[in-house]
Amino acid sequence: MSKGYTGKILRVDLSNRNITEQTHGETFYRRYVGGWGIIGYHLLKELPPMIDPLGPENKLVFAAGPITGVPLPGNGRNAVGAKSPLTGGFGVGEAGGYWGAELKLAGLDGLIFEGRSENPVYLWLKDGEAELRDAEHLWGTYTKETQEQIRKELEDDGIKVTSIGPGGENKVLYACIINDLTNAVGRSGLGAVMGSKNLKAVAVRGSGIVEVADREKVRELTQSMIEQARTRTRPSRPFTASYGNLPTRNFQDGEFPEWEHISSSGMVSLGLLEEGMHTCYGCPINCKEKPIEFDGPLSPDPNYGGPEYETAASLGPCCGVGDPKVVLKGQELCNAYSIDSISAGVTIAFAMECFERGIIDKEDTDGLELEFGNGTAMLEAIKMIGERRGLGDLLADGSKKAAEEIGGVAWKYAVNTKGQEFPMHDPRLKRALGVGYAVSPTGADHMHNMHDQMVAFEGGIANLKPMGILEPLPLEDLSSKKVRTLIYFVNLRVLDNCSVICMFPPWSPIQKVELFKAVTGWDTSLWELAKVGERAINMARAFNMREGLTEKEDWLPPRMFQTQNGGPIQDTAVDPRELRKAKKTYYRMMGWDDDTGVPTVGKLEELDVSWVAKHLADV
Image 1 (tube, helix red, strand yellow):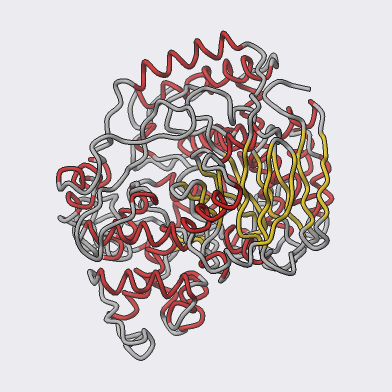
Image 2: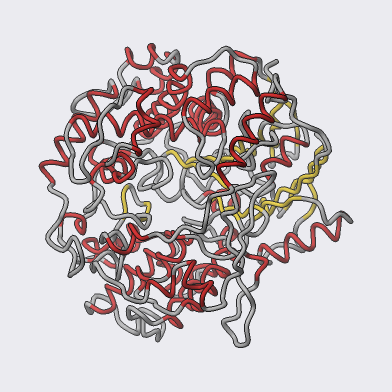
């Protein structure tokens, strides 16, 4: 068995409370690695086509990777996947913190939950020994109370807990799963799948270690990254605000002067965030904000952490809210209810625009003055969504389904791809990012995507030169060269989601090869590892095609073809002809059918997953 793995995945049948252990050998792990790869493998192999994502036939897969739990920077993450209730396709998300590492220390590479428990339960896992315990008394509690009660019940404050709050229980279609109160498996609605199974939490305690092939090399690489991390400071995000990349009032506007107060540095200067930042398991990269309590009803609970950029921008400028105290409280509510803050903010912003345009009124909003900038209404909307109460029941299904329910021209104002709301990065500025949003198997996502400014200068492409990307490409470029760069970049991003390693420590691709060698003992290469990412993308694509998604879903919403009102890029919009051409180029370069975007048999054979082709026989 390769180092970096335990070789064990626990399968939990919630319907009959049967827990079994499955093992895999080195070939399996070298082909699929972890995270996305293991999730895609099990979803394709085991889910019948066209099942209800919230039905008992769906499976919820928690997957670590070889890097998870190894004492090096960026090792605290785990991935979770299922058929997404939000998009109807491949659903996956990742989170940091401590829970993922604890899973590996407890002796497991992953967990697979299948079926549905008749009553609420949680899984208690200690050093490989597992039992399902009653969670009736936890149902209805916020994530903080859930963690506190489990630790009290098991008499151990060191237990790591991942759980859902009322948002997951009520099957909000973008409900998330919360690690350690502060880290969200944010996208795809996986918390709703967890709630549909009556699974409240997974509590883990491990006392083992993750064996590695070359511990001295791991120490050497870790020390090198620690030296780099010492120069890291809190990001100021100048690119976001000054280049027109700050989504404002549902992606309508290009300026938001109050951003300085909403940004992390602004909140620090206002005494709302601690000056120092916090981290995940064994990592020297301090990237976690922690708020400071103050007097008044908006005072945040520091246990839920502070907002990173996506949360601050989605609950702030995207909703026209300029009060940092409101944003802090919104972050807390999202983590307490277990709701994806990105989809929550963008869906509420959609409703705000519909309200201001007269498409919905106070009778529809339960009396809320749901106007841009109304922070009180925004906070109430989050609660209503988490409880599926009144207007919240409509918005809990996301902007795409809400627009379909409202009818008329509402669809024009829903900013999503495949039903998943946009992150806080604008394709009108970042053209290749827009292609990435369009073709992403999970719907719009910024984490497994390329941000164009990264490859617009010589220093930015330094890490891509080993992949054959030799020249910077202008921000506005969307040529075949940019599409090629996007493909290579995303392959490496998805490799990160297979390994599962955090993207904040600036490991170069060559360093990642060294990490894999040191941890697993494999005589591997950058070529082999890039293929891991490409293989995972193709399995996710095949899953979507089997579930009825087509090339028509590989597109951007109407707002992206309109210009912003003011700001640095007010004269810029996505050109649909340019996007269509780039999408076709992407298909061809990926080895997919020119017209349908379905992976070809030849491509699947080249990736050593020929078995996937049978799942596309009827597509």
